[in-house]
Length: 224
Image (tube, rainbow, N blue to C red; front, side):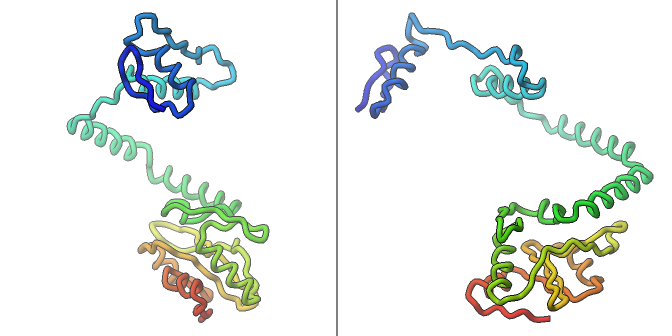
């Protein structure tokens, strides 16, 4: 059912949603007796933090057209870039970098199970399988393959130190106790990855796209 607003003559495909049609005519800009929409008093809501109030107010402003994003000129972009570089140079002293690196190393060692380079390389889908949280469908396919072939597989929590612009710690994804093999599931390979794999002291197997395809079609074999 199609209706036309008697004030602006716009076609409204009602389809039985009478409330939507009624709301349009009630608040139509050309309606001489139009009602003014009441704005929620965000500032009086004590359940919201100051940051949340500002965020809601800005969203409503952009939505209504009261606020608009002004384009940034090339000169302004260049000035902001220079200020950012100056700040980083003054703030991140060599002592500050070493302090930050040491602090992050302790955090990674304490929470190794939640650390992964995949967190910053692409989007992963968390999957719960047999009581464990897997970071991607590729990990799920490998772990389920291990179950099917009766190969013990556990999430690795042991870190290995390597050098890359300073001392860093590498945590392979899985460990196979019965075979004493570490396994890395890798979608995007970087120079840093090749560096840590080269100096890895134990047996390591890196599974990429082709190996995952072999798992899918049933032709994958675990090779050292």
